Image 1: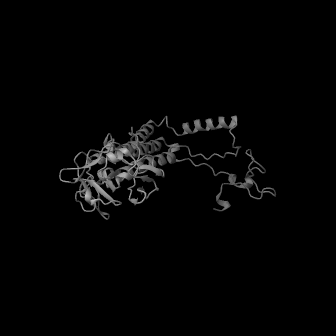
Image 2: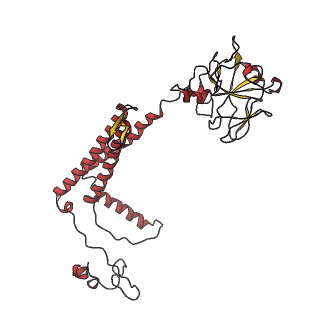
Image 3: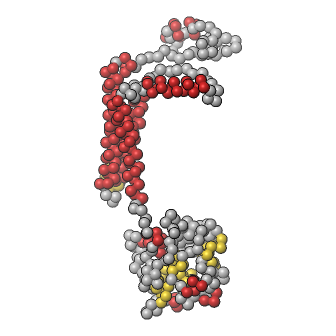
Length: 355
């Protein structure tokens, strides 16, 4: 744009020389070689001069907030009604999860409409007058505080939040409903654990089954110095609950000479020196798999917590907070190793229900 296209009163030559009331240089001189052109003249929008246009903008914003509310309700309905395993064909994506697609679309619309409504509201109905404000010290002086409060009141007035009740009410409705999406998603965390973390599949009479051979164990199958992993009888790898149950019931079996067992209860709960302890580390739940035959120590590979299996599996090194739970075992009439009950304390890391 050339100087001929600028109104004469806005040209630097037509402005007062020196400094204006804010101390801004309006004309270049030797001390200030770069002139401040100032703010361009304010141009009124159609909503500023035509109330019917303002009403149309208000209805547009309210419509977007309303669509956001409907999308949030649709999100909740889809979460409840659509099965997790249902799939649909969407071109060009192919076969995808119907639930994920519905949740993504509805939540995306809900959030987009809130953002678009807020932007449209600000661009068409809120005041767009540019205001030059001088820099001031960072510390909040009384005059600054008064100015901040005055600006806030002025901004609240110019937002027309009190006068545009339709926008206000629909916006509050949209902002109120959107968080429900996150609340509904908490359902995926499942029910409260209750007593589930205190109990495993082990019970009196359950056979100890070798994890590698899937065969019940006899005392003769466990050699001195060996480490054997076992699972409860009846727990199959193809079972839907296998991972959840083995995370609590995984067992490691070690045979120690009875005279080398230091803990009295450990000796009473063993059979001919065969002891059974939880395989789940009491630090963060990693599976323990490293065994030292000479010291009878087992080591967790995650954070090096070390337990002494000859002394009640107490912690001798590392961040674990307590000893490994021991399973009381015996031999049934057929000569197989069996559990004589469940663990007497929760397996794995400490949790809020530990008593």
